[in-house]
Image 1 (cartoon, rainbow, N blue to C red):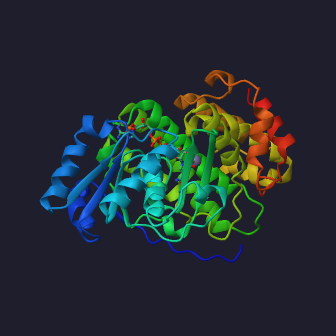
Image 2: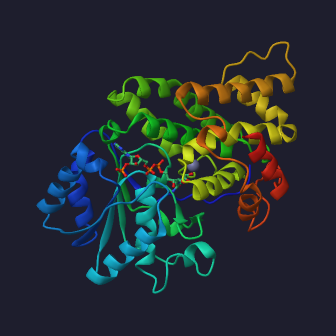
Length: 387
Ligand code: NZQ
Ligand code: ZN
């Protein structure tokens, strides 16, 4: 296990009815609230009304930024920053999925910076501070509600770039599983794949002697596998939604990466795809992950065998590491298909025309991954095998 520093400052309010505390929590940070949300699902579900009611009860002044799209865009972030500057906003409240929360994070940071927020993504400057940020999560997927990451797409260059900075942890997040009851099937599936992929990125790594991290990761994966069919069959099952929601948060709140060198190559390859083609992030991951696993298999066959045996309960008796490990990869791919995720680029309408460009963009800061370093040619090969 490697040395690590672990600090997660986000206060979580988890459970049925917790949404109603939003007014009081926001008031702790000031008077003027910028409410950030997406394309209208919160209006259809009644959550918007409920939030406005609770904020008004505390006499807070409300400003709004709506229309955040999946694969959220820079122009909306800039719009949000301008609202903050013009009205002296005290706290940002994001109500939605990862796209809304990520936008709100960069708006909160951009409001404390005098120039263009894209500078955070080009490396021109580091994020220094942000306005206070609260979130109400409506889709279990990214972990953004309790992590220090944000991913934004520059719609002009079609680059989708992630930043990581401890300043970006939300101050508080309300995780009320009932707010995910209305999440459509497709987005529920994408979210399940995304959280599972987050665990995979931190489970397959080159760091020796990480037994607790392994068991924690395996526990989250086994729980996702067990509860995914239940949320898909019964979208209003509180306990299933609650379980999946907490899996999504724990999968990427930096707990399971403490002391390990996560890989993250598959995520970097995927962000290039969803930036260029505007496909859902979870769909891209379902397609790429099994191919990445096959590509790096020979470096850590023992870990793939452990994954097969412990996560998928594949019997090991009479099998060598290779056979067992490959069975685990196959089972993962089959499971993605069973829950309704795509498993090839062709299925989502992507051909090979931009592979070279995407591979070069993905490696602009150097080769990807920790299990095996991936250079542009490796990435093109993985994209091709994913067709
Ligand atoms: O826009 P609205 O109307 O709200 O509809 C959304 C959107 O169309 C809908 N939705 C969300 N909750 C709903 C709902 N519809 C009905 N009822 C509800 N309760 O779902 C659609 C997708 O939402 P989005 O926020 O885009 O999904 P997700 O949470 O999966 O976020 C994906 C984005 O996060 C990034 C991805 O790359 C992608 O841009 N990621 C962020 C990470 C992070 N910050 O840590 C890590 C991830 O690896 C990922 O890269
Ligand atoms: Zn992800």
